[in-house]
Image (cartoon, rainbow, N blue to C red; front, side, top):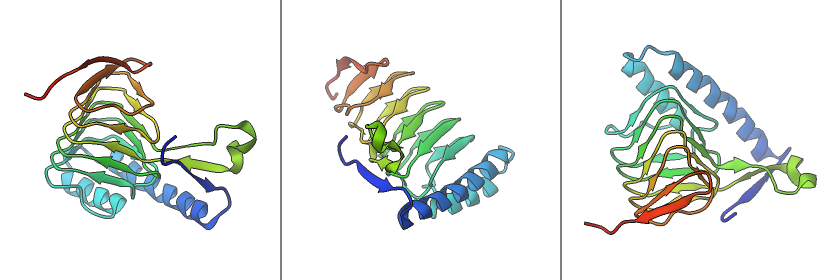
Length: 183
């Protein structure tokens, strides 16, 4: 996988990451237990989780979970629907005007491929979602993937390889349905 790196188990980095996961779990559980109308408290908790405020023009509907919180970058006018999970230890960059549907999972971490290495630590690789992307409901994006500008990812798709700009992809095998030109 491109840009993949191993965080070895038992290192200061892995211990710090494990401690941060506990903080992120606590903060997201508090966010998700608030009444929907309590926007002030939710905004404050998101700022604590992300160590900085969400952009004012971003919309993020709870419930929402993440395992780190410090690896997410939001562009302008981002919309994230309910029940999304961002495993952001490897970094997630979300461009401008991105729309993310219900139940989307963004995974930036995993384990080494070979069984004898799997417990040695975790692997991480960033996800990049470029401007004007629309990700449908219940999509899973795997570590190291870039989704190109203007692409559409159909509901239920597992995205395990890069998506070229202005392409519609659907299905578990990530079938290209069409590439469309700019207007």
